[in-house]
Image (tube, rainbow, N blue to C red; front, side):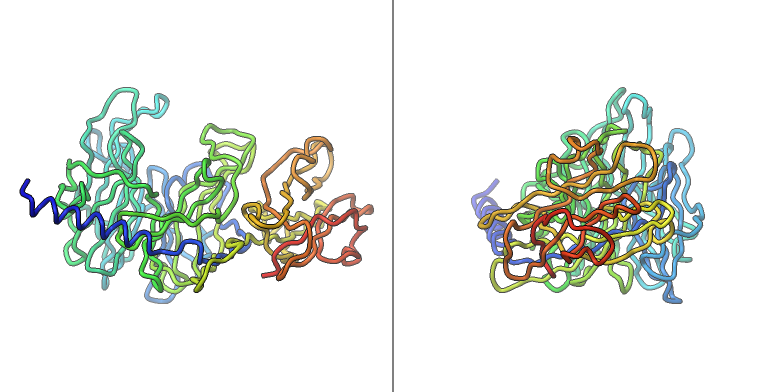
Length: 476
């Protein structure tokens, strides 16, 4: 390689690092609103990123998949609980998609929908064996029927007995710079890689992977540089940043990363949602959050405004993959002129079931929301990490183990098991003393219906007796 080429690549890498460092990840205020369960429990769908498009009549069409892909229509982007229609099926034996087609992402261009389809072949799931790649198709009827275009991204390895191989699970985002970007999982080392194609012609053969600072490695069979990011991506429009979302056990929750140059990512220091584990061996004592994706409320795309919809597949503690739920929740983000502390607030809400005689105070999803459990009120926002400068208390959620109606309890960390309750999750953190923009949180007990709940009022709103103050949570 000539000296000019070396200097050019060095300059590109230097500018890449500089652009990543220019993002003030500590300057972002985030509020994650209450979760709503839109679909489930289901065993034969919700096995990939949920994605949506807006239809000409103003309604929305979502896509859920598990080998087969289904279309679901709703009046609003959160109204995704209706019947499903199959739109993609596994291919013929011996083809690259013989084990299934999962529609991972869509890009609407005029009256044509480009579909980006995770495909698998040579599968024996009992042995954790499959080979992944990505295909494309187009639709002229907004996703109800598809014309296949073939593979646009494959890895460097081949199907191997007893192993998961290939590249797939891609998230697609329009960089609004003339390019479509595909962020994909590479199975050989569990790294994320990225490829791109011109928006004007994103068909197979026109995709090139990012390798050693340049976009010249072919999408079909080429190598790529591993990135420190997730394949669940979107674009934050007001900041012109690519946003990557992941459930990360080592980070302690749902991680948000941001990139200005599409290849180097900086991490927001606090989780959007705290998680005790990300355990795919089910059933497990902890909940599972997986397959994160995001939706613009206006057009269903992943071009995000400062308020957007976060979607993920959810499994309750103690349950297996035969009971998957689709969870949708609003996220509000604001870039501020200076660092914010704390950055993230997670809404604590209260639900009530008259039939169960149970008030459930939680930051997590509630099966039966708006049917067996009715929404009562928001109590404020918990922190997702302990504060760095003030004393904080960690709260956990749990449920009673004894027969009869459930008693959901919000209490101090470590107090569930000692009182005969099963732990559900880390709820978040509260201040031990009052701080600006905080309100009190009390633990209460209703002796008539024999259930615990939380309240911002010392008189427990007349619904029970106050036991003690849990701490102070963020008001907004």
